Length: 427
Image (tube, rainbow, N blue to C red):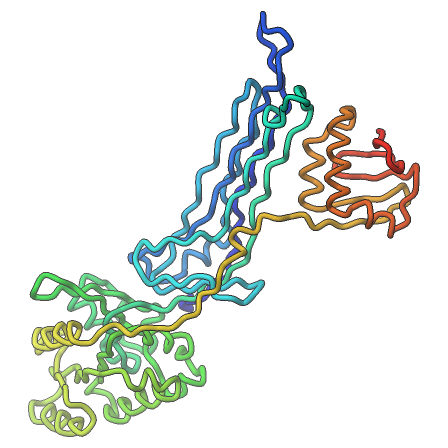
């Protein structure tokens, strides 16, 4: 098993519904006018920070998220229903990067922080919207605007007040289960903790703080050996560290030095974080041996707490001190440059491709295909409108570069039209 602190997902916002071409047909209504309704708006996609999530594992199980599309417009001026927006929960500490641009577009640091990731497409207008004094019976409508499809990379950095550090099997999981309601898996072998466990510890004054059990490190972690590379980044947002040392290990002092050396190699900021030194498993050594260990570590830390996470000896004094430090030490601030996210509103799909066929030319592309869907080749006014829009998009200019000439057949979606200069296309 591998802790998932990075995930790549695809999001697709909802397409807008198409407008409708319709007419009033009520009895006793002379010359009923246009009554085609508008299409509904497609669903937006938002990310929402959730303090109850601690990993990106959910995104390994599901990596594609699609919002609903808006309904098409109806007769009698009835508008299509707008789609519901889609809210995707992410853990606190999640950074979001657009894989296309490489830009960081969101950084979730507050619970319930909400960021728009992909705007849903607008609904197309029905023919009733195009009626004027001069054009009382428009016979065309608009297609719905497309949704936005994006591939995003999520990277998680845990946001906890206190980070637990130590070699594998130092007793961090036992400690966090003893001081909080967290129930991590505990076993007596290295690399038990492959997923950081978050525990909420209540303070005497009624407040609380979050403590994170960071998976055990080994020598060479800063170079990516073992699990270190994936987890060292997680301690960067803690106020301070609680370094747990196993007194029953072969060389506790050397283990302490190894961990701190890996922190320094990773970044000076990590090495400079304040540490509380906890000498664990005091119940497994003699009283004299415990005192000797305290003397041995005095030159490395001013704040040393011998405890037993199993019997809870010394744990209350340690928690009182940690609570005091949580109040004294502010949360670190990070200057993460969040780029303006224009991609969340980029519903433009006007790019098109032209393929030369034996029997004519095929035009394909998002907007071209959407226009074709709301065009009836038997309706002259609809064909004229399609022709004018394609001309403004530069489609004809490109077709001529491909050798288009009078009488050639042009295919757009389900349409098959004959081209003639300055004339309406014919079916």
